[in-house]
Length: 346
Image 1: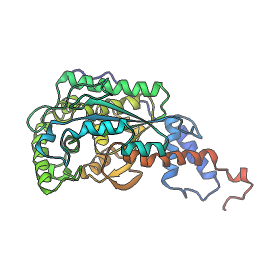
Image 2: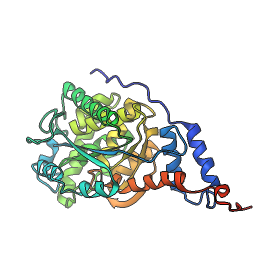
Image 3: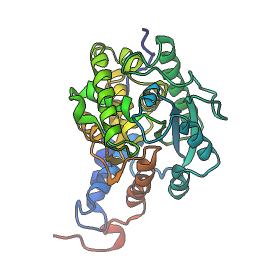
Image 4: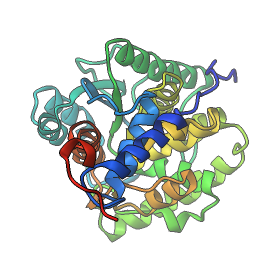
């Protein structure tokens, strides 16, 4: 399988990061008294290559929607047809991310990559659904390339239109199962350690999900050395598109807020494809799924929030976005001791 032509990822500007830290030390407050907010402001300055950083003008959330063949095995609390219904609700403005995006002042876009139904947003549709990954490949080689290309094209379009912060959200019945498989494979974790409650499944569904992950992980481990083969075997078009999206955001020097389980599963693969892409990402929120912590530890990323969110759909990232806005305003709006005419502590 041919590898997408991702260019090398540039690193954020360490000079701007250091300048942000120096500026924080002069602001009208005790040194390092704002903790993680100071770290976030310095990271944004590094991504933008300037201190103080610029306020975000066009943060954009892209939700990649797709169905998964494994959902037919009873691993979700929802029937497979619910994905298309959720997409319709988002397009009508009735979903959780619609409400959160308005508060966070972020634009929201839904992209149907593999929903098993016709929708109004299927410009980048690769196929309807995916193979059941416990017994067959999720996609073909050609479909993986198409899904990755879709993610790259969406990222480029958003950045070209002025997006200065990106979020990849997921939407699809059963997506936590392939996400857990990808994470278990890439972190060397046994299947039982990554099985979560996902959409709120009961004990019987949890057992079905554990068996599905066990069988899918056996297949995934046979192709572990090749990230594209791993996506083909164990992911789905939505996860592959998110992988391309996250990788290309780093290539385009655009900061990203990582969201829930699907987002970090795609991030793990993107980091394999484009090493150091993670320098352009911040983990927004700790997900209630056990695999989420494993992925973040592997990426060496520390979540900003811990709200016990397990929804996906960019909900955790949208909850954290206002904190990034605050982190920027601290560096742009707070006076230094000299500017305020206040004597600094001795």
